[in-house]
Image (cartoon, rainbow, N blue to C red):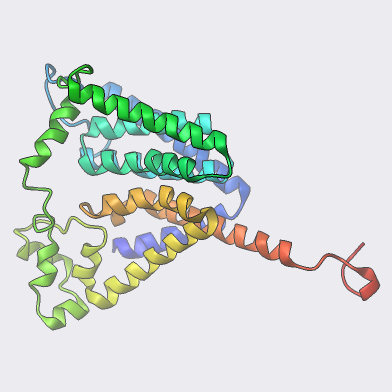
Length: 310
């Protein structure tokens, strides 16, 4: 049922985001939603240090992973607006820092690493840009600060061992829930040929996976609907990535899509409504930019030859 809902939501948002008013509304709504989430943190509390009663921050969400995934999608949405020059870099940085803080408070490892993808790609793009020496210097400066911070933590100069998120990341080496088998990838490969082609279904998949869902944006539809249905879903995702590349280039497309794709390796993010809002936004901007290119390629008006206005 959520597939039908996502399909409907996407097609409802697409014409809305083709208009400047619709895109501006989404931008304001995204910022307002951050304020609502902040109120949820104040009301329900959060845990930062190990000396506190340790728990994963939820806010107004059902579970901490939802909070983490929300922060990832909001980062991608504001990245789209920055690349589209709807907001400046300073405004983007403020929203990004707020979302990074939410990802850290959620203690979602997938969300934390996904959010970090955006500045990594941004710095790499700045350093690679040989046409602008200032951008390259800025990129190397940011990279240097990051390396200094990592070195300071490693040498014990900067002590973050009291932070809950530090324990969360360090404990990854001993945790078992990060393996793909635990996430449910093995269910598909243990099926017979017919089930691989046409799907197992969500209920039967849960039964075979000890009554747990498939934690993957990509393997979930493939397992539930087989190579036929899941293949159509993956084709749509590839179309979305291509649209992002068409609108913002490889670097920009990576900043927008890679966090979502990375998170989707270990979590089923396809059920989140906000994801399909993001997908519709990128489709709309890609269409608009494609139309702009067509407009620029059209011949200039020439009344002497019988077409166009002076």
